[in-house]
Every structure is written in structure tokens, then in C-alpha cells.
Image 1 (cartoon, rainbow, N blue to C red):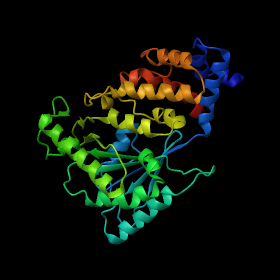
Image 2: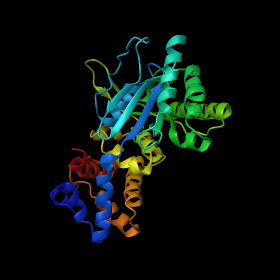
Image 3: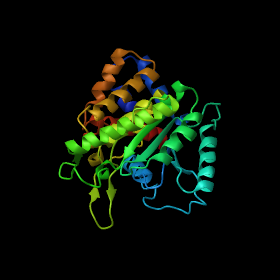
Image 4: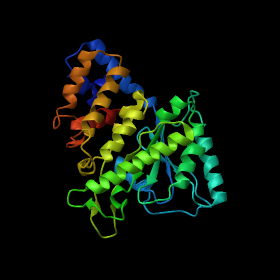
Length: 333
């Protein structure tokens, strides 16, 4: 183990694990290898679907300009570089025939691009739909005719495509949203679940591909007004983590928003924060090729919210993000 590793936070954390020196070395080597790993996520959807708000909410950054729409004639795929995470913000269809043709070609080209190792560059495609719109025709065209045909086999497409319905809070023109508790009431929840089922069915009928859409609200901030908090953002992040390559999942965690409030409000179907934590622990253990005992030790560290290096991210995934940012801070800088 090199001296420079011994002197950083990474070594201190791993060294406290009650495991063999061999297993410690495996975990450290895996984490150090992340220096050469990059995860690429394409985010696309029609104008006004809330891509920028989603990016900023998930990753706590202002790299994406909310509400700033360039001239469709000059709009191309935007590239946002975070810590070993690259977001490709691509315009969807709906800007006119000529612009749509150009957007489609750019998306197809990017989806077929390969990295220096010969692997497909894009690891995951997130297509965002506008939950407040009744006309999703251009979004279906984007998914069915542009995205899915360029994701490889049926199995590959199902692993690399995530469909999410944003702006759940205004899906019924702002009605039936419980602003006090920041969640849909029973009527709106039923409406949103029906929309999810409809999207799933239409994609299946058109392409044969099974997707599991989710609904959420990225939140927003009006000029001079308080921030409208997100809803189901942890659920969205859970699916992003789960559908990403296992060896790259921890990179996503290193870029997650530090604001505990954005992860607070979710549906009650699962404890998504806990699920994210489990996925991260599993990825470290599996990629480090260590055993169940190591997983138990790492799990105990992840669960010690308030004691992790790098600061605690409150209730976000039980302190996992704080740990991840602590150990990756010394890797990515």
C-alpha cells in the first residue's frame, strides 16, 4: 500500500474495517481504479419537461440553466462534466421538422459512440416526460423511433433505458397536490399511476420493450419565491443507481446533491434511501471481489450517520453519501 494512500482519508476509513489486509487492499484497489472510470448518462426529453431542474436537483449543481432555451436552430447536445460523471443533455423532438431531424441524428450518433476501450459510451439514457402534458406523441416518437432502436438488443435496451414523468405536482393543473405535505393526494396519485401504466403499455406495444416508468417532481424556484421541494427524487436516484453498471455506481453517489431536503419526500412503496445505500454497498463488495463478512463490515460503517469521513448528508441513504464523498474526495480531488 503506497504512502500517499496511507495518508489520505481513504486509507483511514478502510483501515478501520475489521477485515484482513488482503481484503482491505482489494477494496482500496477497486476505489483507486475508479480514477479511470467514467459514467456517461444521456438525459433527453421534449422542451419544457424539466431536464435542467432535474439535473440540478439530483446533483446539486447549477450547470444546467433552468428555463433557458436556446434557438432550436443552434441547439445541440450539451455536455456537463462532474466528478467522473458526464451528463449529456440532449434536446428531444418537437422543435420543428428540420430541428427534430438534426436532434435525432445527434442522439443516434451519440448512442452509437464508443469509448477508448471499444465499449458503448452511453451507460444509461434517462428520458423525461412532461407530466402536465396530455400530448406525449413527440416523446413516444423519441423513445420508440430514436432511442430504443439504438440501444442494442431487447435485453440491453431494457437495462439502459429509464423513463420518468416529471412535474407530477401540476399533472392535474395543480389540483390535488398536498402542498403542506408535498405529495399527491389519493386522486392525483391514482391519476399518475394510470399515466405510468399507460406509458409502459404504449412503449411495450410499439417496441416490445418493457420499461418501468416512475413519476416525480424535480421542484423549482420561482423568481423571488421559496424553492418548491422535489418529490420522489430519491426514487428517481434509486433507479438511476440500480440501472447503472455496478462498477460505476459509486461515482454517481460521489456527485449526489448534499441538500438533505431534496431527498426527504417520497412515496411509501419503498425506503429508497435505504435501497440506494444497499446498492452502493453491494457494488463495493462485488467489485472488490470480497466476501459477505466484508459486506457486513462496510454496511456497519455506512450505517453510522454522523461518524463518516467527509461530513454527513443527514438522512440521505443513511450516511452512505457522506462516506462515499469522503473516500472519493481523495480519489477524484
